[in-house]
Length: 370
Ligand code: ADP
Ligand code: MG
Image (cartoon, rainbow, N blue to C red; front, side, top):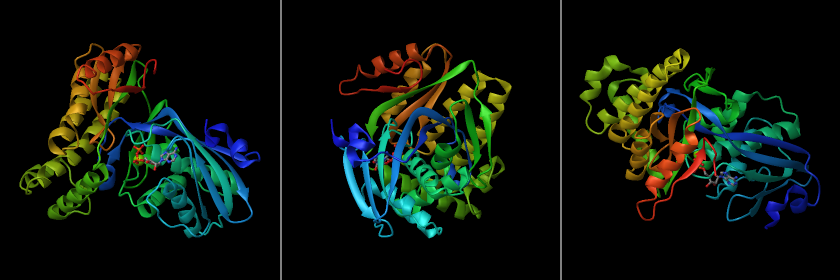
């Protein structure tokens, strides 16, 4: 066992002062819409990042994580944050953004322990950022509300880490819970918690595929959306709806397909909220399926392994619908399953996937997670 795995006191030789947590998330529908100012519908998952923290009076920030390289330690001086291209950038991002906002961040020791799988599309990054911002809020008695925590976490990831992400993940980590879906307007950050249907459960299965160029492809998609919006003469793709279809169709490829995904996906989020409210699981499942087709064919962020998982889930009885969740190019699928059936469906999908040599999928949420 590494030092980092032994708890705060074993690592730092004194007890922690505060403890904070934040969950990972799974997005039900509304993918690649957040950086176009659109709608999203994530919910919190049981996995979370837990941070124990205690202040120091010498300006040094020392961080231990149990989740990288079997346990790792890095440090920096508060006020001397500089991007290193390493996991510590997420920590430096939070302290740098707080300082920009006028908070005198002292040195501290912190121990990170997360059960959110890293890089699987369940937002371990936002879970870490929000947990740390909460830990510092508690340690320094800051008056910052949960939307502000999400804004700080977003600025840390977007501006300091340098990932051109939208605001969904940080808002979900800060505001979502496991019993409701967070219906979020990413332009205004207005949100509403929609109770999840009692007759269904969510099943999340990781494909085991982590695309090497995911961040580069993500940037390309974001740039394509910005070009499509400019060509349509609007600030963001959020500003066009189905009525713009003929103009979207006349955009040069692939901008036509990219814009069509975002516009139809926004409409699907609104339809999904209506379906949940009406208790119409069949309709909600159809929307999952349509969202997957749109991500696969129009936005082109799926991969064959993910398509196979989605098809195999859809072929199971008791499955209302299934889709790629998260940014894509690998990662995980989410399926909407009749309550009580997730264990059986998960096992069948994982077994079918393993029939292709070298493929191994893992159930991350739903039923009896192994
Ligand atoms: P996702 O958010 O989908 O899990 P990202 O690529 O956005 O994937 O974020 C993963 C990165 O976040 C990791 O490579 C690491 O740098 C950082 N990270 C997340 N959780 C932790 C953790 N518990 N300890 C250290 N770094 C973490
Ligand atoms: Mg992330």
